Length: 151
Image 1: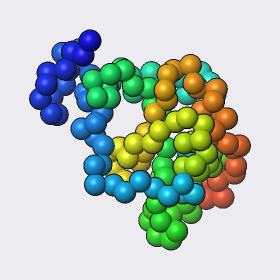
Image 2 (image 1 turned 180 degrees about the vertical axis):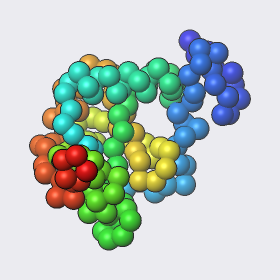
Image 3 (image 1 turned 120 degrees about the vertical axis):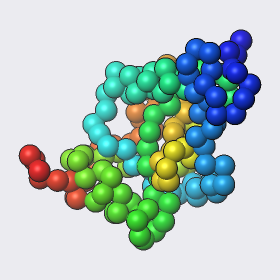
């Protein structure tokens, strides 16, 4: 049963915020071929920990939610391109996961455009789906724009 206050933007009585309030409602769904990036490496334990953290902070439509953060390269060139995201927001990661929207959707996950563009939340159907999520994120690849060690 939901413990929602019933008012938009108001925290539930259990202290969790409605994630739907953080969804960019005017965002057009990204093309299935768009690149999805996440700094790595991750382990199943780390993914579960990140998903649990979202669950401690948020509900989605009044229900339990488990999710992890990714960046979606929304443009071919410019500030929201894959190269730019690797060079800026992900520069502290030597390796990253490089997947596509299609790979994540096919594996049974949904993507919500949350917080500031180009951030997305990959929503897990249940916490036990972390092995499938790790597989859907794809292989780790080198970030050619990573900061030098100690930099």
